[in-house]
View 1 (cartoon, rainbow, N blue to C red):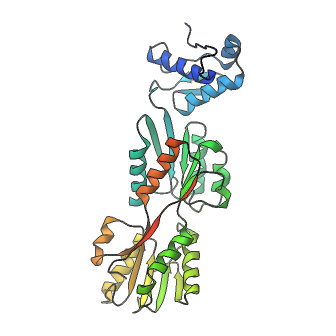
View 2 (cartoon, one colour; view 1 turned 180 degrees about the horizontal axis):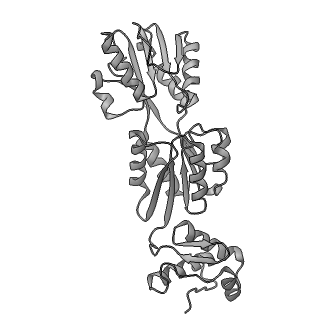
Length: 332
């Protein structure tokens, strides 16, 4: 049974003709799940093709999840879902409402005929490494949040360089990859600058910065702003045993600490936005109504998902700094 058909001088690359032949054979029922494909050597000899041409076709089918390989044995049909043109590996740090916004926006804009598999590394470098190693070569595109994991760049560089996109945080070791990222140094500095007329009413700025998951750029931008404009400031790693003093403003990256500060203020009978101020990181619908409104510094997570989808669809290789804004409410 002849599976592969190659024609010369028709303007279609020969590796694409191999792909089309296999798709057609699947569609016609000539190839079923688990069935072995002709070897690379056999196709090369039959059609006088280079190994690279046949290998390119098989690798493309492998990335799309249509075939798989067994070392020393050959290639086999893995799935008959030939309509899936792209399989995308999406690696987030953790699941929260912000990442859900990115994910839903990405799915909305990436279009049909795409399979998106989402994974989470939970800031664990061993999990990060295993997920990437296990996925290498099995997807058409890889979208990765490296966060602040020190070993992440070297692990990411084991993936096909043209298929990788970096999301949310990038650094100088990842400049070769297209990305949609937050500039945490500039974002917090500019946000505090916009809010300076309100901040001038307070005595001291305090950022709660555990430093494990939070980007170091937040701390750098915060310190730079306070030093440039001569604000008294403090950086604390946790809030749990601290009493709030009148005239303080708390910049809070983590929502668990936000709850703790609000609870402590109630115990001390302090009024938010009058006795002390709060600036929270990352906008959520709930922050519009909690305590008559919580001021936030936030990037546009929906835009982030949309932009990375458009980059993939349009074949663009850019580094795009995502928009960030300060939303002033009654907590300041």
